[in-house]
Image (tube, rainbow over all chains, first blue to last red; front, top):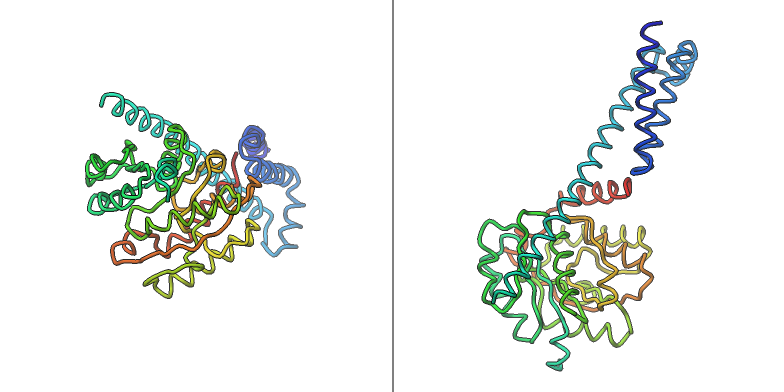
Length: 110
Length: 229
């Protein structure tokens, strides 16, 4: 029961994260949302996880939950990559502005 | 070309560590009367210094951002200086300045906003067979993803009207910008034409140019760009 509550708290945080990210990166938001909802469902209905796991050939329900967790980690990793790209866009805009301002200053000082 | 018309044309040259050749490339352009802006993309070899005094405007990125970012800077610089036509031109000497007139003529003759240079309608001198194959595959991919009936892709030799250039907002800093340009042209709904150009590969330009392994990174960049706003 304690493990279930801890996992639920973590997955709720991921749900909030997914909601927040969906405005900026809809694909990431939807993927995180689906993975977190699946995780929540399996945490509270482990027997369903076992049945589904057997159906798709994973073996044990707990393994399925582990796989869902790995999927969430990968999505978060992808999201970090996207955030880095967006940071780079901001740096680019800043560098461009600086370069243009320097060029203008040089041409007016001539 | 009429010298008055040439003065309305800005040629954008994005350069990264091209100190050895940049002065020659600029000289080849200014003799036709074109305005030239060299965007030094944070070079470490003094490219900006080599371009200074050649008659070109020089804009220097404080850090290396990538060719796409440098081209966007050059396009914005040219537009701010009332350019009527903007041409993008490689810094490694593989493009021919004489072909610019053909691109501009193609724009005016067809009433288009974009004239894309095509090495496969023109000539690709000393193009290695493997690279030809990759370019053909990339062209096929571009046709499929943009719906544009192009015969060449990842060719940095293009001309745009002021209206066309204003619609280009490159956010792919690195090599994927060449695909992004075509996507933005397709999305703009503005008319484009292809014009034959000659691309002359040399040991220098092949060493500086895109590697085959870049193809994979271009695909990753294009995909990643679609995942966020």
